[in-house]
Amino acid sequence: MRRVLFVDDEPHLLDGLRDALRPWRRHWHMTFAPGGRAALSALEQEPFDAVVTDMRMPGMDGAELLGEVQRVQPTSVRIVLSGYAERDAMARATSVAHRFLSKPCDADDLVRVVQRSCGVNALVEDQELRRAAAGTGRLPSVPRLYAQLTALLADPDATLADAERLVEQDAAMAAKVLQLANSAYFGRAHAVNRVGQAIGYIGLNALKAITLSAGAMAAFPADHRIEGFSIERVQRHSALVARITRRLLDDRRHEDGAVAAGLIHEVGMLVQASRAPDHLADVLARAEREQRPTFEVERELRGFTHAEVGAHVLGLWGLPHAIVEAVAYHHDPAAAHDPRLDAVTAVHVANVLADELEAAADLGRTRPPLTLDLEHLERIGVADRLAGWRALAAGEAS
Image (cartoon, rainbow, N blue to C red):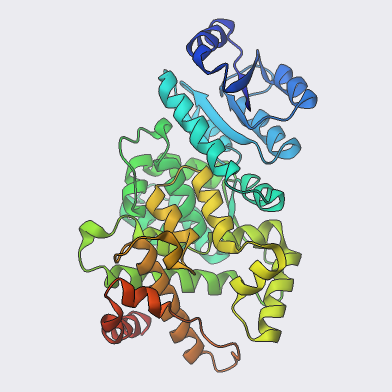
C-alpha cells in the first residue's frame, strides 16, 4: 500500500481532496497535513512514497517543504499541486519538485500522476539508484553556456529563438525545460518532445525565473574536478549525437522526441557527476585501465548504468515515454523490443557513430570506440544503411 502525504493550509481543500480520493483508501495510506510544519511532523513519523503540496502556505511554502522532503526522504516523489503562485516561488520549486499540477485538478488526473510517478520509482529495486535519481532536482550545466544564457536572459531584447539556440546545446538546460513544458501547471495539452517547442510553451519569463532566481539550473563548479570527466566533452558529444540523430530520421513525423533524447541521453552521467563524483571517477579510471566501455564497468560494479539513472530521473520528471525509453536503452536498443527505426535505435546508432568520430579525432585516446548492435540493426532491416549514416555523421562532425 502506497503512502501519500497531502499538504495544504486550507482545511476545506484538504477535506475536498479526502472526499475525492475516498475510493483509493484501499490502495493508498493517505495522510492530510494542514501546512508545512504539520507535514514535517508527519515525515518524522513514517516514510512516504509521495508528497503532494500546495505552494502558497504561510510560514513554510511548498518549495521550502519539498526541499526538506528531498533532504530527509530523498526517494519520495515530490509533487506541487497549486493554483496561483508567484513566479519566483514556482521557480524555486523547480529545483526540488518532480511534477507540477495546477488547481483545480481532476481527481483522476492527480491519481494518474501519483500512480505513474510512484510506479517509476517502484521499477527500481536498487536503493542507491533511487536515492541518486529521486534526490536530483537540478543538473550541472556547462559553465560557458550557463553564463551565456544568464547574460541573454538579462537582455530585454532577447528572443525565444536566441534562447533556443543556447538551450539546445546543453543537456541539463534542455532536460529542465522539457520537464516544465510537460507539466500540467504550465498548460501542457500534449506531450512536448522538442526543446524549441518546450521553450515556446513555458516562455522567456519562466525560463528567466528558473535560471536567474531559482537555482534550478547551475553551472558545473570550476573547482569540482573529477578525473577523466569533462562536462564540456559531454556537452560536445551530446550535441553531436542530437545532430546525427536528426539526420538519421529522414521523416520528421517519426522523430518522436529522438533529437531531444539524443541531446539529453547522458543526463545520468551528469547526475553521477553532481551526486556521486567518487563513484564516477572510479568507473572512468577502471574503464580506461581495462579498455572497456563505461556502461559495462558501471553494471559490473553496481548492477545499473548511467543510462538507467538518467531514464529514472526523466521518468520522475514526467518527460514523454519515447524520450525516457531512448535514454534508458541507448546502449542496448534490442531490450526495447521495438522492431523499427525509432528513437531508441536512432539514438543508439548516433551515439556510437559520434563516439567513433571522437575516438578517431582524439589522438591521446586509447580506449576503443563503442560498438553497434549489428544483430539488432539487421533484425529491423537497416544494417545496409550504415555506410550512408557514417557519411552523414562525418558531415555533422566537420
